[in-house]
Image (cartoon, rainbow, N blue to C red; front, top):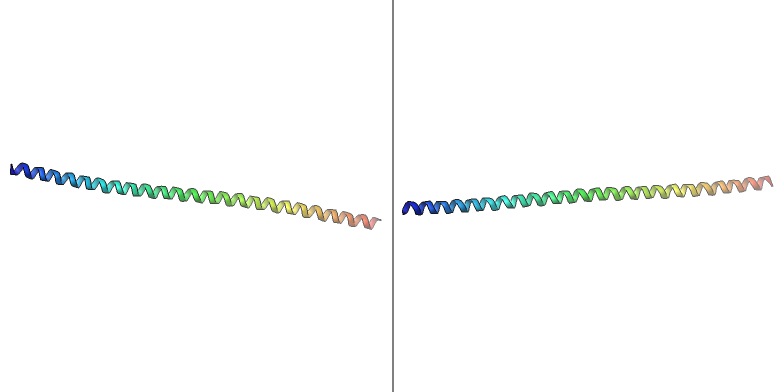
Amino acid sequence: LSHKRERSESSRANENDAESANRLLYKRERSESSRANENEAQSANRLSHKRERSESSRANENDAESANRLLYKRERSESSRANENEAQ
């Protein structure tokens, strides 16, 4: 009986150790998974930010080109009027 009790206690201790190890492993895996998710979210945010900056940059370029075209048209129009006045 004494031998059986010792084996039973030893068996219970081993089960407790195994459960404790499993809990630690589960916590570590959840922590790693959580960190991976955070990294993916940060990466997605960086890509989104880059895309938004790129779109904003393109919009600014388009605005600048449009402004340059208007300025060029106005200068040509003024130059044309000046030439007409000289011809008269």
